[in-house]
Image 1 (cartoon, helix red, strand yellow):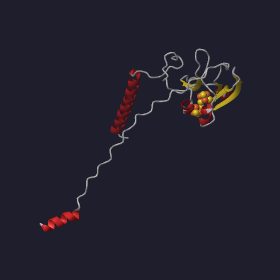
Image 2 (cartoon, rainbow, N blue to C red):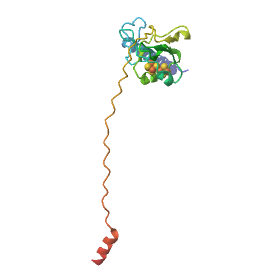
Image 3 (cartoon, protein in one colour):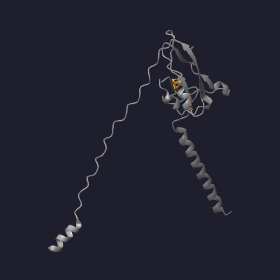
Length: 192
Ligand code: SF4
Ligand code: SF4
């Protein structure tokens, strides 16, 4: 190696060191974006529509709106929901189907939301409680009707249907212009 090459290599090394230090210095003054979880749990913002886990909607009196129709269970693509029902006798002697146990396996849910969409009484929803980690898969299987079932629950009102889209007025069909009879036109020109 000549003396010139020796000094060029020293210069290149020094230049590369300065470039690296510039990147480090820039990151030193850039605002930090690291989430200090779980210390920042109180300030964390989880979007309202985030689908963390399925849950029952209970009202203030401890009633839910599930009528055990099984629609969510049938529409679930991977058998995540399992429903057992029982028959109860009403005061007027009629028999009525009631929910007994509503089981949901969070471990196999794909969070597609089909169950919520097809529910005719809006009885279920997704919570945005994202902290669902457990040590065994068995703990991911949850009974959603965790309050004791009441036989005198009022019949839930059916879910409001989404408004029908406004009818689109069909476009008017194009009006065909009458085509002039070319043979007659030719004859007229010949006479002239
Ligand atoms: S979100 Fe989809 S996969 Fe999960 S329980 Fe509902 S229908 Fe089944
Ligand atoms: S949650 Fe809704 S769809 Fe599922 S069984 Fe109950 S009422 Fe039917």
